[in-house]
Length: 221
Image 1 (cartoon, rainbow, N blue to C red):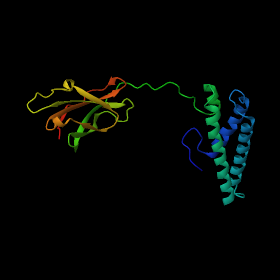
Image 2: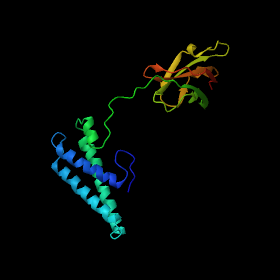
Image 3: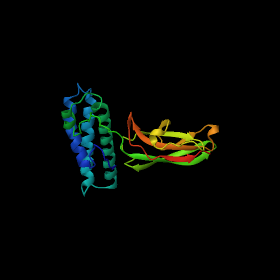
């Protein structure tokens, strides 16, 4: 028997108990939930068949390889029907929280989980790709990369020729682009070859920005 880790009970006894709980609820709500009578009857038939097959397979005098296979098939049919019924009849109509509880299901959570501003700090490593091109790889300095607040990365940069005054801190950077990828590519102009590019990154989420990463530099090939 397949092991389910979601709303359907993992053991066969629990699956039978849930299907028996469903029968009166579905029968009493056939009209508002648009459940055909045949569906209720099919659930009853499948439940009875699965319960009989389970008792046969568990009984020492009637347990055989054939009985075990028949039990497995009966529960596959029952649980397949229950999953389909949940999808067709319980998710489309406007069920209330008590309706879900009467079916042994958790009420739907309609309140979105608030996502705060990004708090992680990131920097980049650069690597050579081709002429006038630098690859950049985002590296987390602090924070959890899996935090849902980390929607993307605003990479700021400026270019300084030899002898020009370089930027002192990230606020001095003038150009930027946004990416959701942890590895990206920057293509520079032909005339930028031999100059130095300075970078700093902020995590960005719908206008909310995280702390600056450190200022880093790389020679443009």
